[in-house]
Length: 306
Image 1 (tube, rainbow, N blue to C red):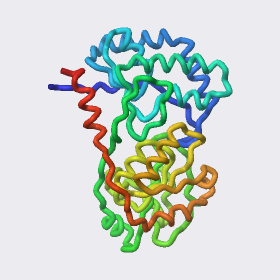
Image 2 (cartoon, rainbow, N blue to C red):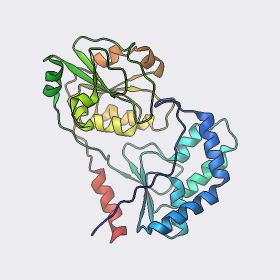
Image 3 (cartoon, rainbow, N blue to C red):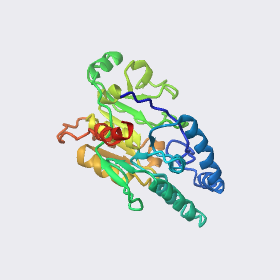
Image 4 (cartoon, rainbow, N blue to C red):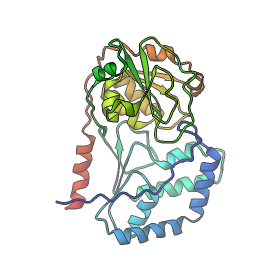
């Protein structure tokens, strides 16, 4: 069986001020304008799907495509740890006009054959077609000795700083200086301090870099929290303005790994040395994680591609 994957991006999700801050007003305006023309937006997507002629739509998780697929009787499966109905609802409580938008998004998700909720997923009580599957992630290989040779320090410990793909203006000037600790950051940020390393200089893949470090500093988000924990790298996590995924993610990480949390204000002020130090010498004692979510998802999806 030959399967061709066609990537097609549709949704904006939320309008962000930075990797960690949401622009609520702009996000609401985007959804309001989009849903004022929802049927036309669906019809535009119908035209795209008619040209593509897919056997299956796998949505992660743009809802307009699910509405379009339903019009064409194309089977669809949604798969994610979140959904935009509940995310948008959380950040639009001050706008009465948001309620019908939320309901329209829910109806779109309901048209999927099933919604595969990837563990650890946010709770989705408003959706009746969910099916939980194990985590989906990558495993890395540790090259800690290689990093120590790079900094010429056999006692060095490394903290990987990853805040997601959204551009964020950051300065490391206020970050704590901890003996023998090196921060590994995106090369677009300031790397003038001797204890800061640009990640590209390591010549390691991101997942191997994660496995090679002694801690990860990140914001709340599925990929970083789940992959760090599965690769046995403890986490310092910046709390994210009541992000709906946060309770489920934090509970799962605390069950399977080691977690310290900080506020956004403390991150910007550089007040997180204690949280980092608390994780640097962790003796990992947590049991292995069942992480065959990709295989489980493939078995669910494959009958649609026969």
